[in-house]
Image (cartoon, rainbow, N blue to C red; front, side):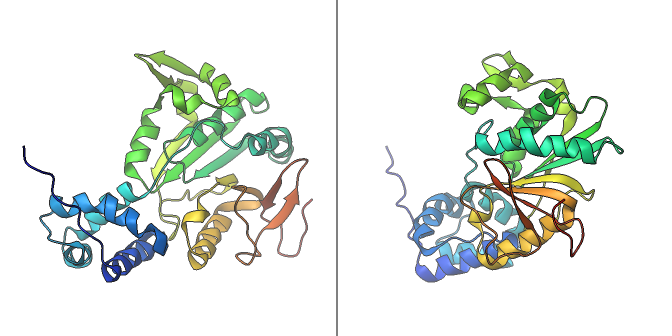
Length: 287
């Protein structure tokens, strides 16, 4: 039996050049201690394209006509998209109990709501939001859309399929959401009511390409900014701010903050959560 090929080492210079490619294109920032991750996950890409080492690979990405397509394939293997239904439940409970009632009052004239899951991965968060809207009983007859966007085409394909294993429902609240799914051949498949409400699409948060053109009322961008450096975070936040309606809500992950990143949002203290809101006017406060 033939021995496996030894793993290619990723020299420091090639690592820095590769890191810059993904930073320029997507805003992702791989710190020095993640050099092993690029070496491990990109190593098989060398053999796929018949390249002798990582220096040849970075030149391939920059100069070969096939480079742009390979960059998209490479980012698929570099990004981790681990999620599940009803993740960070306290924040979602605040959405149910405080933000949705406020939106019902504020949008009752239009009877129209738009929510955005930015960095939706395989879609669990977007479907969770859709189920929350339906379960609330507040928006019968309203025009409701939940947008889910992500960089990964592989993840978006899984999100659009709407098919999940038991592990995706591992939180107690997630287990309750299974009533919106049908068990088919050992997989839980999203009900038609959820599918009609959720729209998935590819988006690059760094340049805003692919984000919804229509203004949205709530954006969830949780545990996504962690993958960017400070300049890229500021740029992402500018794009999210531009998509939010005046008075719209921004929910970040608990480990994320806008400190020294953006003054475009107001901090709002809810009963048990801190969230952000786009001011209604440049000099106005939160009503």
